[in-house]
Image (cartoon, rainbow over all chains, first blue to last red; front, side, top):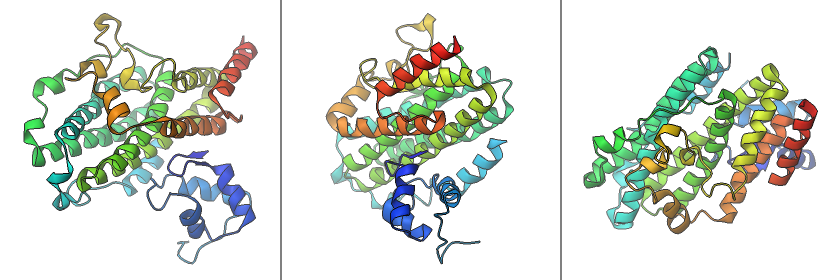
Length: 64
Length: 276
């Protein structure tokens, strides 16, 4: 998928995460606009894709 | 059913007209008459969700899931018009549209292939997201700047919702859906076909031609082009973001890498040959 608010594809975001593993919230704040000026609708599908690539790292602030 | 999932997601993101707009920060010194005119035209443009909803409900009579989703889209688009109207009511009542202005936008759209309309509105939301981001950067008056930023976020969420219905359509209709989507994708990424590539610029009623685009029925039909070119300055760098959004999501949807509009045109040719 492609995140309009970040102007980045999920592939780009996953690639970034594969090179410098970050907790999920930190990844969102450093490499996307999802939690700042963005709409937030990519957060859940991005989490699922990261999990599928074994690249999801839970943040201390993440629920569940 | 996608409707229930999307309903919950959009409800979580919903903003309040009363408490989430910083009305008290209004600064009249940072606003021109021309900008107020633009806000009026934009409020009218959003009001034109009404005939689009009538079209969607009529053309998707067998699709209860999508028809239910349209209730949310309708609510949120009317809210966009309302927040802009409320801005005018509070700060520039002389610019408030007349009943005739609003009535002119209530006209029937001809019947259209539902999957083409779906893709058209996906692309339209991608474009609106960037128009409103650009408008938010352009304005200096704090309240309208904030309003445009939240409208941009809503439009991005709408594009994600339409995208999910496009995914579902491919599962159900396969190549037939892909062909219709890619036809619209080619149209909406070809700047030579239409300079303001948005559903509001498309002719939608043969009997009313040429007054059958939403823009042609605004009190100032030339406003949109002027607003984009001379006011908010929606230039090539912004156009590129729109193209990226459409091609990036079409790449994911159709499981094919589209780096340019030409790639999408080529894919369409190949798909047509394959299906023939």
